[in-house]
Length: 342
Image 1: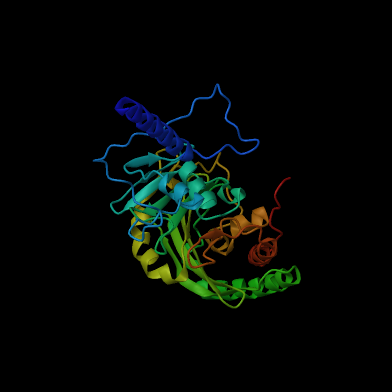
Image 2: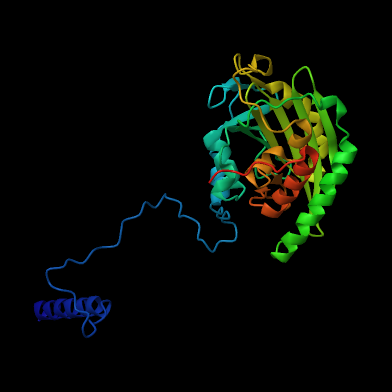
C-alpha cells in the first residue's frame, strides 16, 4: 500500500512538472512553425561581472558627434609646406617665412574649389598659395594669396614715376560705373569701385608692385581686391589675396613679408631681360593696375573677392567689368587692346 502511494505520488509529480514546462512554451502560431531540422538557439551566456553598456536613452550617455562635412574633410587634408619652394615652370620660387605656409597647386585648387566652394575654373593656372600657418581655412580670420603667372611679356616700369594714381582711380571709377549698368541689365548686382583700400606702391629696386581696391557689390557686400605683382624677364608673377575688407590691416601688415618671399630665379629676373629677343607687354604699370591683363583676356582675371562671412569666393566672368577696364586702357594708350585668340 505504501509502495503504491509512493508510485502514485511520483507519477503525479512527473505529470505536474511536464505541465509546467509545457506551459512555459507558447503554442506555435499558424504559419510560424519552426522546421524540425532547425535547432533552437539558446540565449547567450553573459558574464555576471560584465557591466552592461548604457542605453542610448540614458540621459548620461555621451552625445554622438556629427560627421565632418565635405568642406571640413577637404580642409583637414591640406598639407602646409615650408622651406624654399620652386614654383611649377621653374621661373620663380617662394621662400616661406615664419608664420606662413605654402600650399602646392593641388592643395591650392582644393582650397578654392572644395573648401571655399568656387567653380573649378577659378583655379585655372594656380601655381600654389601662401596662407597663414596653422589657421583653419574655415576660420573667419583665414585668408590666402593665390599665385599665378602671366607671360604677356616684359612689363616696362618707365612710367612708374609719372603715374598719378588719383587720376587713374577716377578713370577706373567712371568706367566701372558704366560697366555696372550693363551688369544690372543682365541681372547681376551693381558693382562700384569705392576707392583705394591701399594706394599703389612700387618698389623700383625689387620691381614689385602692390595695391588694393575697395569694391562694393550691390548695397551690402564690401569686397577687398588686394593685388601683389612681381615683374620678371618675360612676365608677371601675380599674388591675389582672398580676404575680407575687415582683414585689410592684417593683410597690410603681412604684405612686406609676402613681397620678400616671392622672387624670380636666375635667368628669369627683371634684370635678365634681353631687349633684342624677349617679348614686350603691350602695357606698363598704370595699365597693370587698371587691368592690363584683363584688357587682353576680356574679363577681370584674378579678381578675388570675399562675399560672405564664412566663405571666400572667386568672382568669375565679369565680362562687363572687363569691358570697362578695356575702355580705360584704350583711352590711356590711344588704341584698341588686343583681344584674346579663340
